[in-house]
Length: 267
Image 1 (cartoon, rainbow, N blue to C red):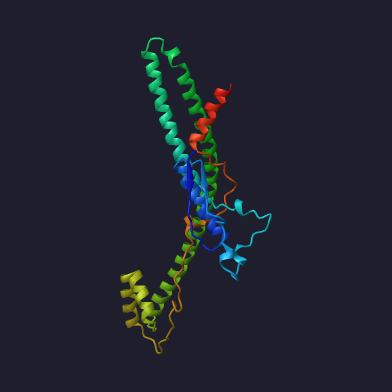
Image 2 (image 1 turned 30 degrees about the vertical axis):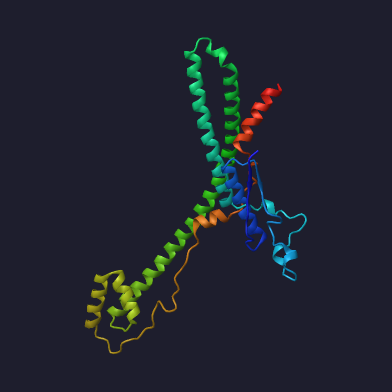
């Protein structure tokens, strides 16, 4: 049995510590560990060491479902790593099958001589392929959920951007019209117009100089107290969604192959 040991520092909350633990499990699985060992009470502080400390951030009900709160991004990372490992093993086993098939065909009485080896190799390949398909099915559904959230955030932002662009165009044309009438606008507004369309700015200024107005109006800026709009990151939003369901148990590829051989021997 291959063991992994993970030493971790407290991240400040049960949820954050759980996420660190899940990432460690994924790394251990990637390196073919059968079991991972964590420090004592790795999801919380070691409270006896800190007398009088506020423990409210670590309170968990007896029937808490905290173990079921894996985010889509976390699940994506874990199962992508698992899929990669299984895919690599499938490739190795497939190569071994082809090489063995060639030996069987080129060796006298090869089918009989290599029958047990071929049967064992076939069992390993089928077991790994079956488990791979199980993980792949989950990941495919997970990615459908992830893409759906990603696309919905992008679509919402496109609507907002189009709306903001329309409002910006309205302000630009209002400034141009005011300048054409010979009215006074703040330098900030003139700069906005010039940056948007230099030719339109020059035309407006020329028209304003020719305007015969008895009284020039003075306007405040249309962009006063303007704050830069920040948009939600679609990838972060998709990663933050809770996974649609618990994923299959993560089992090392070596364990799957050993189990397949064990079933054959027991027969």
